[in-house]
Image (cartoon, rainbow, N blue to C red; front, top):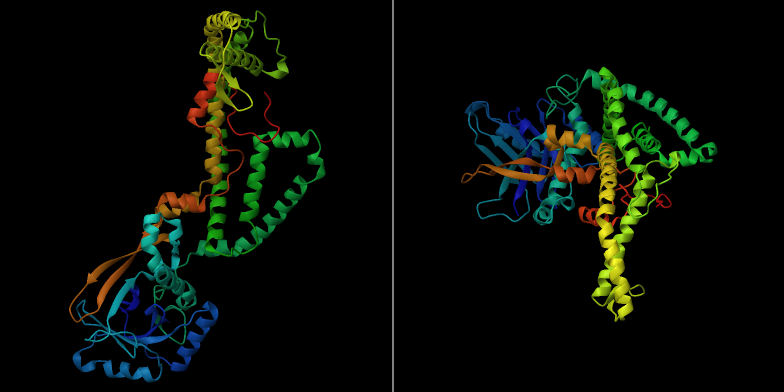
Length: 519
């Protein structure tokens, strides 16, 4: 088995010192987190390691020595570093060194009891970007396609251990050169803790603000749950209006975002961020639409453009229905949907009648009990009457179909408008916009795995690899972080829609709840 030493790239140019990290015996891996420099007091270093173990619940120890040979041959620190193994005993004891003025590296592992090659233990040196690994959320292979999951499952445990070790050692990274600590360290934040004044002020103000908004949302929730809103007609209006449904959905999002409970895992934090971005985008789109409609009197122009369409629909509704000889007497409160429904029923009746009579001519009939077409013999009178009815319905069908087509096209315009609006609302409500933006701007934050690039492979030298992060594909980002959908979902495919149009069945834009369909 090869010993794998994960070394941060930020420590490649650090001064000589001690390697601090975690040893994983099950995988024969050593994860280096920082380099402790001289001069140091062993007791203070041990106290620092004990503090990191208590805070991060991870076993951190001195793994070995790091020698950056910037000195001349006469000033080598080799004998001094080799003697430190008696003060900080650990097996295996790593001795990592870098030659002066070159890219040649050396790595030895003394005291390692794993299987060794005839020439000595085989050591593999893997460089990793400590900042990216710390901020990355590694997704399990189950979130990947099958052909990728099989290849990644063998190394998933080792990679998860490396990422978890770096994440738990975050306490160690709070010490930089500006803090007066007992031990001087080199890590990804040793030159200064990465921070922002605005971010720090926002973090300190987030507690009182979230507490205040949570109280306000609790009052709104208590008011909306009052029995007064459950009395008809308020309950009927609340269940029918999409605006009320959207308000209830956004209330749940706001309650999630401004909750005072701390997020338990990265997935919950990502869900809160996605909900907050979704609410902000919803408000921004609403304000932009209102501003656009009020500019240059566009709302009045839109109303003037829709008036002729309403007049045409009212004029068509006043015509006599073909084959009936009467005008539709729809009340104003029933709307202009009644003529369309009457024509749809008439057209559907003629299509079904022609279909049944066509089966009569072929000696077939529809078996209602078994829901299938069976053979049947008809006498001469039945065939004669069927011929007369078939002729009448066939010659009346073009006129009825023309009226049905006009009203159906008008209804399709409404269905398409409702469908596009519902699709836009569904995208704003459920699309993980924050996760997609994070994947676009910082791909390493959402990782699907890692890949290794060979840096150098020389005889007698350790194999040096560079660990790079593979970003999660966009489709899997949407699948993993998509917010719960609000409202109803479409139920018709294109084939089912064309079938309903041809046979004259009523088209609902979305699946309705129980009791909402009225034909």
